[in-house]
Length: 351
Ligand code: KG4
Ligand code: ZN
Image (tube, rainbow, N blue to C red):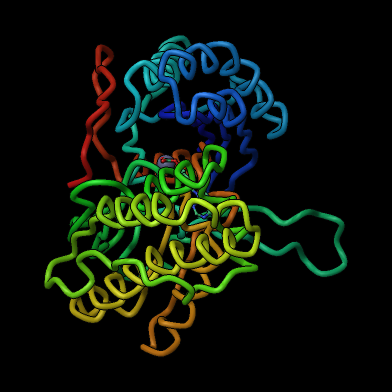
């Protein structure tokens, strides 16, 4: 099966071609620079950029894959959740291409795609060959797991009981982890998105310099809350404004905020994994790029005898490869296809 996948739920325009579990191409055009000056994603601008970029991005994906549109057996696109007018661009384009080719079209839940993205793995090239490594489906190695999805919009803990069967255990009751990185970064005067900048600055800072709250860490549920941590950072900066002008103190502040966010994420994920009786933990979404989160999860999983599968770094942030791999799996499992007049679902929650 050869499938074209499109992703336009937020500020990345992406297209991928997947064939029989192999990602033949994955083109991502990021709008980060465009939105940076506004301190966050502006939906109207995002949609216009998607309209401008989608066809060239899809054309590059087909070109990189060496596949012509006529060879496609199916088309997939993100149906939700996300920004309504951004989702519309990729979803309607996907429907139109499938309609013109008279091939099946499938709408994919963006979070479900993140959820299964750790099961996309790098296939090493055969020794002695010049071939680059490829991304392939790792579903053959699937095992029941507890999965942490951490992005700019969501923080979710999910129990994946078997392939394509999962249950949400908990999620954030206010800000998402990525939002906490971005908003505390804004308070420190850092550019949007601040997550990667905090990660970089924190590498040279002391994570124990300041003791910020670890919200809901000891609560029995699997929910998260990050708005109190953000408020605590706001008051701290109000009371110590000079600290932002001292590069080392800024690094210490970044390291301390990051340590608070990561400790809650890691401890609650491991606790849920032990309670659900799984042997595997996975993590995905933009924040799973975070170096401390990756390191702490590795250490904690090792201590508790759990296998860890982290999404490949290039697949943590939004991309169409994860849409394509999940879509192919669903088509093979004979998942229901949306009707021709299906609409986007901006608030489509993962069940
Ligand atoms: O999954 P994603 O690309 O978009 C959403 O669906 O939200 O995630 C974007 C989020 C942003 O909040 C960004 O600051 C955060 O991921 N992020 C990071 C890192 N890289 C991206 N947060 C912390 N450390 C990073 N290295
Ligand atoms: Zn995402």
